[in-house]
Image (cartoon, rainbow, N blue to C red):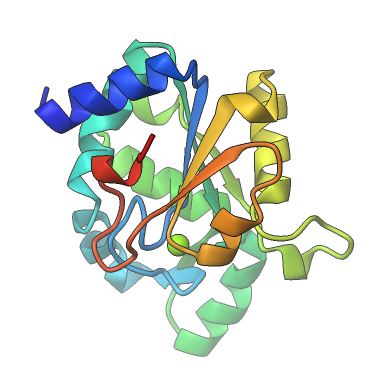
Length: 182
Ligand SMILES: [Mg+2]
């Protein structure tokens, strides 16, 4: 385990964090899916996984710290994108789960990561930013929002964090251990 990973885990333990939530585009993956990703770009997309995300997820699961992906990529985007590009596209939870099983070939890892692919504008009356995602995630793992931390490269998602804690990621480099600043 790298020094950065050790320090990251020690900080999480000290704060008693129960769930670590990663945004997908430009955070877990150092590339943007544009919401729906063309199949021809999928391999490249997975190769751009953040090295720190790749290293830490298996350790989090072993230590029983839960992991989730909260993304604006929404399955509702798939049909329109497929028509637009005239090429099959993946979006929403389908994209998240395909990415996870590709970057973590050990299914026992990928299967434990909870995915919420949801674009608020597609769902009338839904909570904005990542608030709906975090509600779903805290319910799924049966923890309170204050036990969750979010890493996200979109400033609005970090600033409008509600009861959970959120940390800004530099979208040009993706998630890094040093993003966890407390
Ligand atoms: Mg993002």
